[in-house]
Length: 245
Ligand code: FPP
Image (cartoon, rainbow, N blue to C red):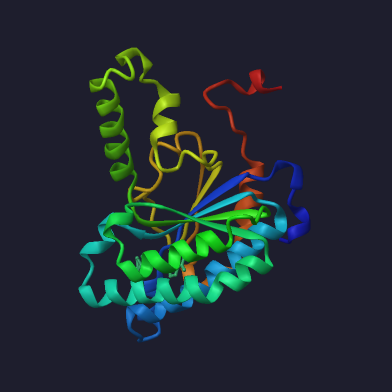
């Protein structure tokens, strides 16, 4: 398996990843869970670089879910500190690699320090065009859908739209993911076979790829494997094979 086997004309434009297994990785080594998160940063770096090198345009990483707030406070705090530190220390690398940073999720729940570093990095990298790295922070798909529904309902109440104007396109435009195409490929590590409230609307026709590799062990090699598997699948979007030719 190597990078050369990948057909660069058939790349997914957008890959979304559920980075899972940090805690188990640490436990296997007799360490605290945060040790797993710290080692997960290396995988984030590798996969971002790997995607940018290939020409993938958007990479969305599930870094912290709405549900993650209910983890023990010590882990939540350690994760937030790690996020702030990583965003700060990686900005230079993002610049060097031409990567633009963005975020989706409930900004109102993020600690001030985290928001500050995030906004600084988003602003510093805003003119980069090689790839966009989107961090899902305090994000859940249901949260996004509820918010979008409220916005649309308010517009209807204000008389700005009619009920008949509510369609897929309007919902798409109202979600926080509206700036980006839907991911063609979603990857989850660590052997769990769930979506866990990630991009539910946007993955309607995504190819799903699951691997047992724990996130801190995830490297470019594993990314290439997922892309090759994606390229071997036939995407029919509800049509028959014959209709595709
Ligand atoms: C899931 O593993 C991982 C997370 C909830 C956090 C992911 C965060 C990082 C990789 C740190 C830095 C990220 C960025 C983008 C700078 P888990 O804790 O659920 O593992 P488990 O299922 O084995 O318990």
